[in-house]
Image (cartoon, rainbow over all chains, first blue to last red; front, side):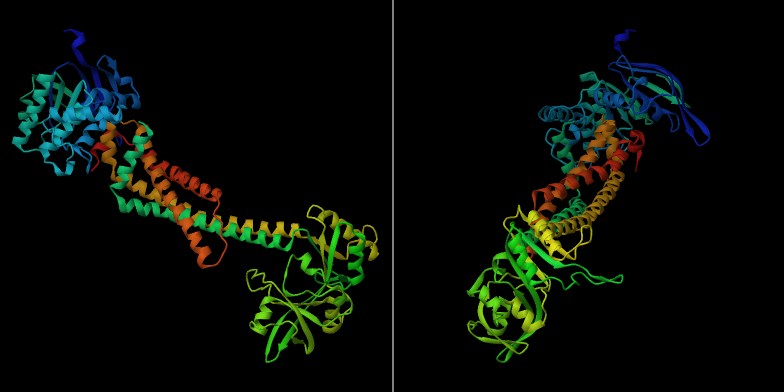
Length: 229
Length: 405
């Protein structure tokens, strides 16, 4: 395998939480490489450690032990500020509950990551309009998130994840709050972004229909990789 | 993130809750307004006092008898009766920094004119009193040196007395009775206006001090001497000269205490303006407490706002906001709130100080200094009370914040 193509390298990641007097070992040693352009689904029942793994991959959290490389950088050694920078530049998040700012327009929501990368206002608007066009919302930029349907909101969230041209989009149960038809539309958007734009996408889900579109599926149980498909 | 954009975001966030933002800022608005209005009242009082004193003449000195003690029992101030006409004349003669004197003998009397009567202050003065006190005669004339020497029964009416007894009729040449003794009115004084409180400077009648001694009080001493120094610069010199002359005349041994007091008008004026300065500080201090309370209001609302927006903070953090960005965002909201409140408060303060001066007939002075101070104080209140909630927001863990319901 050409190491230049490796976007994410996980070496024996563990995560241990202290809950009262007991130690909870959420991750017990995960090693895996994700290549650029992959469309990976991470599956597992609740309590399997998939959320913890997602938080570490998304640079929201740090592993207790083990090394995590993103784009050649060992981010497991980064401090909070550096992690915020990585989240801003390299990662786009899509959440189950959309997590858009209420009473804020689609455009402003999409521009949000650019605010923290010091992109000049005019460029920010241009980039945000482009990202909205990529998810098929070019005419709805001035609609507030509360005036939109669930599917539209998730599209805005995807546009927001795309706007900083990240190396990776991390989607946590992206269709969990949508009906089947809208969920399929959203999955089609992910698939298209992966295929046409070559964006690496990680879907965290327990829904087999979602994981069906993925090229690779990782099953996690009890903090370990159970199977890889 | 640049400052302008941060302010814009803060304004947007505040405008989402317009009513709440306004109520929060109201504490600051009232606080700043109160500080400015209160300080303007204090400074107005100071200006008024200073104006009064300069009207009276800052080269004015007062000589009064000292406090007498007999077998260890002290009388009140001016309890000596040892100041005489001759003392006053010696001051005029021997002190070259002095150009006018007026011996004074004061009393009260019931005044009767035809069917009207009035109780008022009687000032027995020397003929130079109008010059010393910088007080002009309106009609007729003040009594002359001749009137004084021969203790004539002539009088000059203050405008209040004139109004009460004559009600606009010409008083000149009329005879009024003072404790049943007839006096001829030879002049009226211009109005000085009330000096505040119950004391009206125009409620007075002037007669020669000699007449007051003989006819009204039956005494030989005088109660005080008003002295005018040649200039304000020489008033300290005049004071020293007066003390020297009186110590010799009263045969006071070197080292012994004076049996008289000399006061300098500019010292008195200074004391009075110091008193009003304290008033200003007091008023301003009380008003700034409301500003402080307003600040606590901001902190309270900011804390509520942080709790309400934990989810938003989590979203922003996951999009790459650093601790610093979140800190600045909430701090800016607090500062914008208090600064806008401060600006509105200035309007309120200046406006109400004008209303006070218009309706309560008080002098108020809004100075740039008090406005600037109140505004800076308001902005600092925003920083101070906004910091804790903002810091609390910035320290949130992004994962917990995102999961917060």
